[in-house]
Image (tube, rainbow, N blue to C red; front, side, top):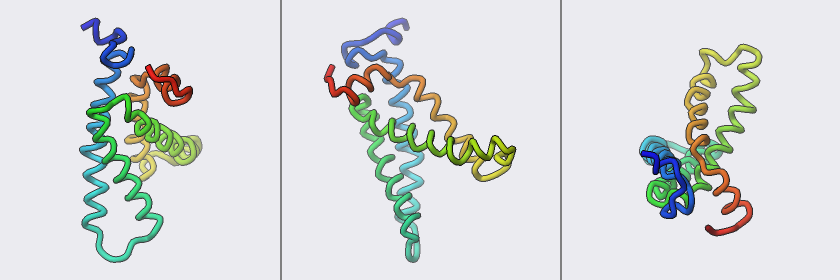
Length: 141
């Protein structure tokens, strides 16, 4: 059990528990969000609103790529970083102002906030030192 919380050579010095939690979130993104986005794309009837189509296509692309994260977790961390960024940005510019003025509860934005706030869990398990060294500094471990 303690080996889950120690750097592992197999995972380039990252704790196995971090990798397993990230694998779980990649899997959940792939199964639920990819299913929803592809279902919307494949069953849509009529012409698309271009902005709505962009959103669905972007969601389908990133969640489908998250399926690779189940098998190549550390290599696919930029997909997870993308999710952190867009959900965090949305929470800051949409949810927070509504919450601050007591207008969030009971709204559609409130429902999305409950879903998006879960982003904190994989963020806790993200190997930030690895992310910084690999994706910011460009150093391979």
